[in-house]
Structures are given as structure tokens and as C-alpha cells.
Amino acid sequence: QLGALCAGDKGKAILPQLEVYADAIGLAFQVQDDILDIISDTETLGKPQGSDLELDKSTYPALLGLEGAKHKAEQLYQTAIEALNDIPYNTDAMQAFAQYVIERKN
Image 1 (tube, one colour):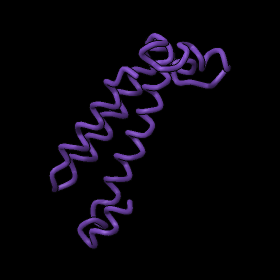
Image 2: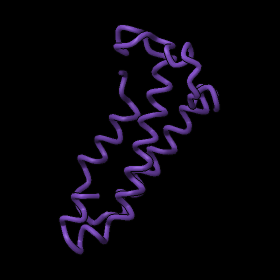
Image 3: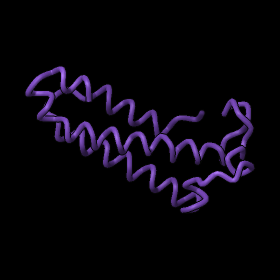
Image 4: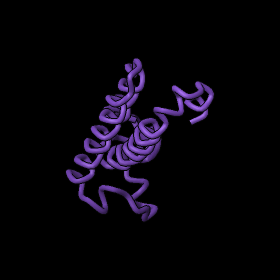
């Protein structure tokens, strides 16, 4: 938000789209993190695989199932990209970051 607000009226005009993007990509990051805790190995993760389950944490795969969580991550990614499509400026870096979030392996 700070960057948009510092850009003056043009930044303020796209603040709603940036907020949708930020909310969606932040949640997609968490969903992907929960997925990786199940499907990735300890070495790749940098933490013990299944540690969320061991700690009885509430996770998206526990709530939605693994496939449901993957679908949720994809939906959130699409929401983020759609928000960027409504911004009349170059959003390539933000699109690349969104892609990284749902494709990351650790």
C-alpha cells in the first residue's frame, strides 16, 4: 500500500486492485506452504516433512484435502492475476512473483 500511496492519485486509483492481489497471493503462499509440508521432503523443505501435522496445526490440506488445497491455491493465483489485469501499468514482476508462489518447492 505504501508504494501506491506514495505514487499519488495514480497509485491511489489502483489501490483496490493491489489489495486484492496482495490478499490473494498472501493466502496462496500459505496454502502452498501447507501443501509442501505434505508433498515435499525434509531436505527440500528445510524443516521436517509433516511437521504441521505433528503439531496438529490447522492446514488447508487438512480442511480441503490435498487436491482441494491445490485447487484453492490455483483459484487464489487466478484472483491475483485478474486483479493485475485491471492495472494499466506493467505488472510483469508481480505476475512472475505470483507464479513463483504457486510453483515453489520450498
